[in-house]
Image (cartoon, rainbow, N blue to C red; front, side, top):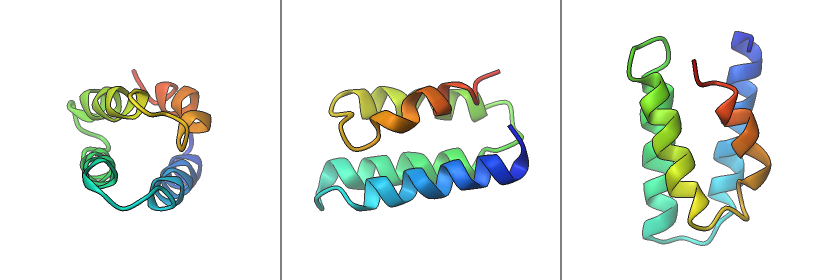
Length: 75
């Protein structure tokens, strides 16, 4: 995925999460997304993608369209 494509995916995902109701779950998803962004280019990037996907799977309605695209970020 190109740098622009990665940034666009993260932006779209952030917007989708921010549309979900306020609460602890939303806060966890945003925190995981932030960690994912910060880990780009590091060895822990894949771990952060997996953590976000696992958290999102519990109630994936808001970000379901992004899960396969997030999976494509895994090495």
